[in-house]
Image (tube, rainbow, N blue to C red; front, side, top):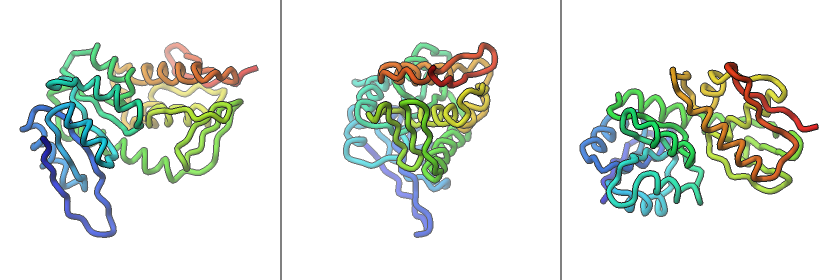
Length: 241
């Protein structure tokens, strides 16, 4: 079951298309009304099954996904989605449910927000992710380090000329590390660059994203660069010998 709200806009501007998957219908309607003035075109689904169907049929720029869903869980939806799509995902989690949050990030979520939340905070995170995607596509200049090649214009990463699938957040982290290869980048800088927001106390999201990125690079077989943790400071991409 879905319900749509179409945002009327001038031809000069195009609405960003967002899918919300949450079984709380009142929440979906509230978010639809709240976010509509920000030039967002929203579709709300009440179950994981409907969410997967909508993702298959539509062309969305961002997914807001609740973990606790009837039938197929939000984590299962995310797991299936990441097999075929790199669409940015913001997970909605129960406050204090750190395990689900960590698993969501490990499955490829870009960011998370604990319920109950302030709609303004969600709007800010949505805008940050969409802005990152927009400005990222405008940047030019291919980056190379060893076997790794990153092209901002096509949003494509290859290792030994073989494509490497990354989430939007992982892509931005890798780009930042490539641009500063051999130098330490603080977690605050990475958070601002990849998630478009300040690093919050006790927030380990960047660490999880780094772990995921490191695992993908290792699985791809690259030995030309490694991501090193500078304890208490940040991370550094070190060229191979």
